[in-house]
Image 1 (cartoon, one colour):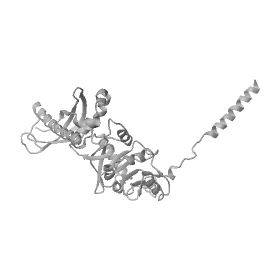
Image 2: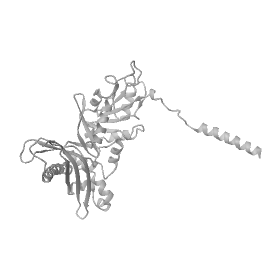
Image 3: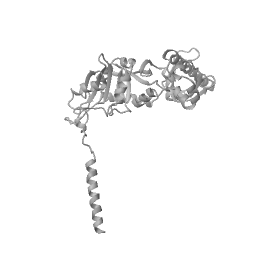
Length: 382
């Protein structure tokens, strides 16, 4: 019995040693200090294929970087820029690595900047290269830059150590406020792969006076940029597709008084009704908000009827913008920018399979109806 116990222990030790020998461990690990960390990636069209530019933080210029006085502080020199061309994304990366002292690491990349020309010609090759890069995070923000994407990496913003962090925070704030669409890289991949969608929307920025300026929402058909929507047209898109309040609405004062009234939306909800016999789509949107500016001081909101009149005026403005956007989507873009096909496929599968959605979308009647509730109009002295 004692012999069997010793023999069993011997086999346990032998098997443990063998299992340790088979464990790969971290034999190929690279210390973070030995990597060139790419925080922003910009891609433009070039005669060769792709012009790739990257932004890499300078450890000596950022907080904790080890310089005298506690380190860093950002500003000029806080980042290094590298730019090279290649027939593919990977080839351009390889060219850049010839200039850096460490291998590139894209696992911390926060922003993907896509040049306008490249976006118009199609992002398929770019997205294919990104799909094959195992380091690229699917939660980074893809953004369209009007002009060259590389120019956005040259912006120096003193409010942030690393300039591209300012753009990332701008996007985060716009999404939280309900004014920007939210689409990360993984969702962009999904949009292009799903036959019921294939109409991604991305935020569009331009560089002006060393600042990032939001310039609207980029409308895609498959992988090609068709155009850019600006307020007030973006509101209906945000209401139906994103269920967000959108941008404030300005209307002229009633009763031919001079000045304007600003309606600030606080919340938005919508429901969709589909008619199956003769396909038609009705979207009912409920808006709630408050009046933040009223230049016509003589127009007193002292009666319920006046509140209702104001609500009707704001509703009319929303209806007018929504109709323009529907006409633009069906007649000019001929693409389902509202992502209604996803809803039809999920809840009316027989109707969806009866139709060729991409082809028939432009012929289906779409109506967006608004119900606006003005909750507050501010305080006035009597």
